[in-house]
Image 1 (cartoon, rainbow, N blue to C red):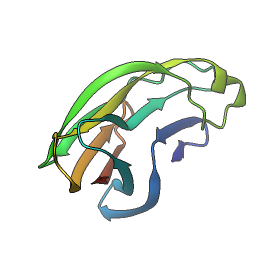
Image 2 (image 1 turned 180 degrees about the vertical axis):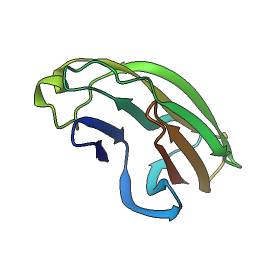
Image 3 (image 1 turned 135 degrees about the horizontal axis):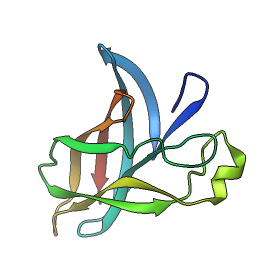
Image 4 (image 1 turned 30 degrees about the horizontal axis):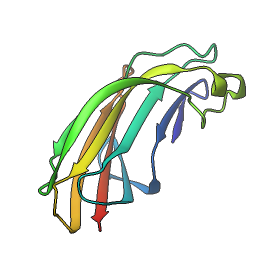
Length: 134
């Protein structure tokens, strides 16, 4: 998670475990999620809001590396920015992109997905997600 110019918060919800910068200018995140085969789970949702709780442009999610044993679906939804520094905005829904993962039926093991988040201010972030399927 980060804050732009100490004014515009950018919240990446999910299961962020660590972050580092390995590609110049692109912040890297890694996370792990657990699921069962055939079950659709949300693996990422992002928003970019202003202090007045309005969107500061709708971020874009791109699949950089597809899973080998499942599929990723991209969509948008209305969501509560529960992690924002603007407390009054936590109860106001905002529109943002979301990514879902569904493991292939019968699959058991580990799958990996890499997503890129592009924001209207030119900031790029990437998330590598390890999914453990039981």
